[in-house]
Length: 126
Image (cartoon, rainbow, N blue to C red; front, side, top):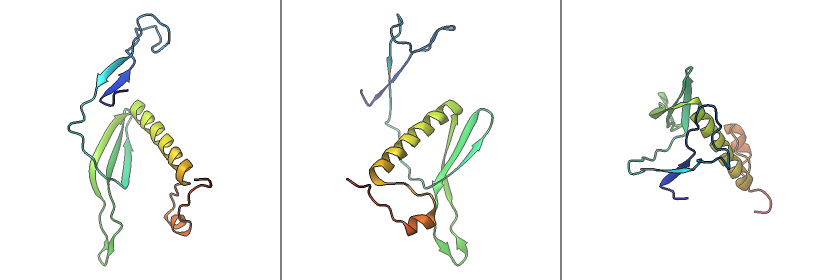
């Protein structure tokens, strides 16, 4: 597959099912991707907000630095807004990516105290 194009199934006519193999007239289209303005951002913090139609995810960085005046503020830098269909597809892709990582490198521990007690270890046979 060309990484600058994304395959999609055309919309089905009302009363028919899209993507059924062998249906006459069903073709997969290649939609071009323009990544020329893509930006990369590192995030280690997020918060999510919902309404009936969309998911809002605020992304940022947390330095975890504590000064005598208290912890440094979390800096929010980006907001993602998506419908629930896109959010579900993203959740599935992230779940699969984490599962693959854990299969290769061991369980990703979310509890910071447990991460310090049990440093990551590679699974046997790797």
